Image 1 (cartoon, rainbow, N blue to C red):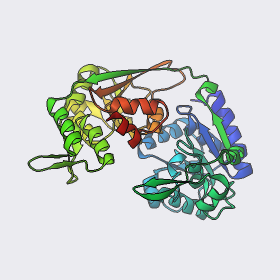
Image 2: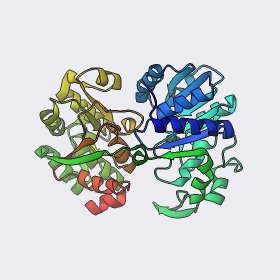
Image 3: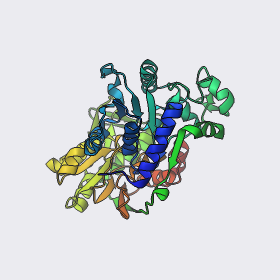
Image 4: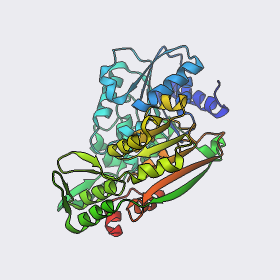
Length: 406
């Protein structure tokens, strides 16, 4: 195996930035091989010990890339949730995969705090990876880099002082209270990051993928529609042992999102499958081919398991080495993995996030694959169509969108 020409070129540019600045942000679009490019850059700086921090489901794929290329440095690959478990080591380079996941506004997440503590302790060179560095706001950049020595915002004591120069702060009224909105990050944030950032698109890499999207509609059971209608009318559905309560608009939106796909979480915290129609529809139409299925709620996975039995898996390694279909939760499966061995992608449900839409639908994309088929399985009369229309336009599906659907 060897790097593609653009990967080799970018790895050399990354090496130069690591030497000059101590860190580099690889903002390469999805499926362009950010992992291999970063691993190659570590070799160019003659690293001895490398720490690769990623999502749990991506670990086996990264380990495979590292092993296949025979890099002569040691690597430790760990998910963000296990950072506190790693043994103390002088890391020459720390690679932070899906770095945008650290970009909380306005207070740093636990993940960002742990990364900052690690970097301050070891003074490592840093490579950040993301296809979407600031998916919702330029303000998300601050906590991604605030733990890196010499970052362009190090002059600011905290996020709020950073906002004084780089963010148009506004106010929104929520539940009668005026809340400050820090999402108005200015272009100056991106301009400040330019010396440290390498951007590269699928078009520049020569990708010419035609992603064909298909919407399929399922008639759910009469009980499903009856529960949804009663909840919209009365905001509560009481059973013998459980209660479905939608006493706020947000809860009504969430409950209907669940119910129209055949599952529900009760007020007690318990959850249940109420309708197997979607799972059965997917099995009846796609069971003879190897596919990737994205689901939203955990009970949807249980529904798929009931219908698919042993022919369904949830781990990438098993999917790649068997004839089984894989089921992945949308948020955990939308980043850092490749489903190139899938014949098609099937969505059991759809997420409210535009980021989830654009990232997850690209999981099959490779330079050699010219067409990809993505199937959206919607309940007839459900709310999924409205969500789809919003996220296609790169908008998150919000309460305002939901109220218009009613």
